Image (tube, rainbow, N blue to C red; front, side, top):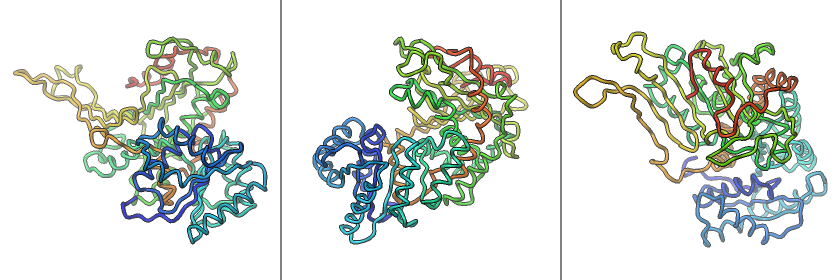
Length: 493
């Protein structure tokens, strides 16, 4: 968004406004955008909840949460301005009368605006309520303007390919595709967005971005936390569906996509779909060769003893849910011929760290033949979180009289350029307010991503893993994940 972009008056309707996502991410994001002068001049946030409440009580609740979760300080002056835009609305998700009252509320806001305002509906609710809300929105025609009305839907978008197709078909009865914003917060992260600039804004890297120069690609999203308060959700989901089907595959698309002819949203999303279609599907009999699953047992994280997954509250004592997944993918296209893409994610890992590693091929002949065994591979490491930097690892002469080599790094540190970097949800919500779909998933993207993991998902659901738990909390996952990369002479970085 440019500094002179003018946003149309907008009413933001948050379904599930009393939930965890709203208090930790959504309201802080809107507040920070407001402080930065990025919100529309005329806007209202209509917070929907089942319980009876007052505007004053709800605003105080939001203020207390902002003190914990906002990246910007909550000052008296800023809060006074922001809170005036928040209204609480008692609403029942499954009652038609509630939607009729909501419609009247929206019309009242339009009268204040003096024009038919944009409407942004954010579904911060359990996936099983999406169809209910969509049908009621359709019946009351409160999102009938495809140019002004938008809906944001959180993951998981379905639980397999068939359910994703069903959900897409259902939403298409109420909304046009350009109204639907399927959100993946990883695409809003600063370093992930920087991949496009890094690849296509520099002449020195794009010529090397292919199988002739790159040996392998690794994508890791490791978490120190366990299931926390999400046991009931996670037990039905697991690492494959919770992380790989969406977050990691979207990152893979950013790394592997062909150069777009423009930055127009349709063009960017077309190139991502091309990547997903090119990923070689894994046959059921090859799942064990290309994919590894794990479940954490008891161990230590940061020196503190922690329970295993099966000892967590709300988890079945014989649970077959994976908390770790690692997969080797191949892309059947000219650019990435025979280059393995390794992806892994896990809970209760040694440290919280999300990063991409591009490992370049060794020189076919080294001038430094006597010390060739000491040569480190050239690597490009893109750290997503908690660090936000890009590191190029290469060999250099060690200072001194002899010609000895040592590995060194060149680092671009995002925090050194800007310490107060916007959160991912700020970026994504601003794009939704503008009406830019670039960072959101299209229906065919979602369906292709589910198709990529389909056989793995079905195989793991059918066959119980008798080795669970097979990695200690506080480790880097099961030993089989090391074998997955070592078969081709690689190691997890």
